[in-house]
Image (cartoon, helix red, strand yellow):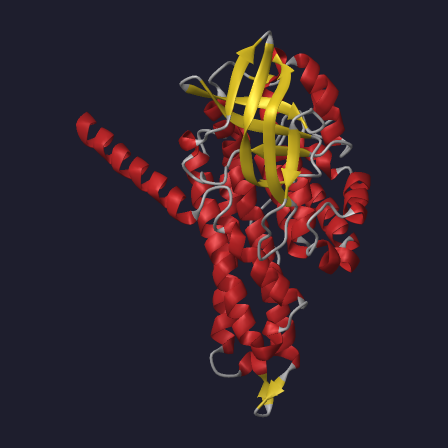
Length: 384
């Protein structure tokens, strides 16, 4: 079941590397995917692979001249096929550090980005709060200039890598605008709580900032540039979620095909019985459609992230919804064996569900796409 998208040799080589790493982590995937802190063995193997360098520009120890959306997507598809923990550890090195790459001071970039590339520093970004999810303009975390420093106060919630991160990019309200602030995790006043865990366990927690003082140079970009930097991160990495979703769906289908081919019922293989063939074939069709859209969007984002954001958003919605349908269908094909706690298919089923929510829920993205669709039509009608 190979991809129908023609990748250049650069990406095929990267895909091979990522698949090799995923296979090398197969023996610990069950354990790692239940962890609420970074698995040390997964971290060691990812570090030794050198793949985290894909998420940092070459100037700061990265693999390629610039961060490449298609490269990140190809790697995430391969890693998520085997382990959600491995995929998340890889992805967050880019998602958490990208604002530093494009908005950080020279000193911060030179000090921290090589560590991110080498997996010596773990990155994180703090956006959501206990009472604020998609509506980020309602955040209550604040940053103020006082005595030649920045002072941050607030409470961030559901933050990936909380507790294990080396630094956080904190979104805070600054006057009437919003800024991102670089906050090293060991800064006095920073603490972490872990009140929640989700159905597919992640390294997740709340970050509390109580009179946290950092230098003025730790503001990422200009004052009030927080949403601009967030948009740049989104434009570069949202499509990679689609890649991870395709990887999960592919793994689920292969589990179901293996089971249905080996198990006999009523004197024939399950794969030829009743509605099972249609379920398997429909899943294959949907995965290939999702993969095609995902790679097309990722290739476009690699050239022009902001210009391709609508396409990336479509891929994110399409692929994560496919992953949800495919994993559910595959559990059904496997019957009671699909319900066994600790099985790979059960793990994939749980892993697929949060993908439809994080980095833009399906409903929020569809609302944004619909607004643009209507707006573009109105522009076209005006031009006529």
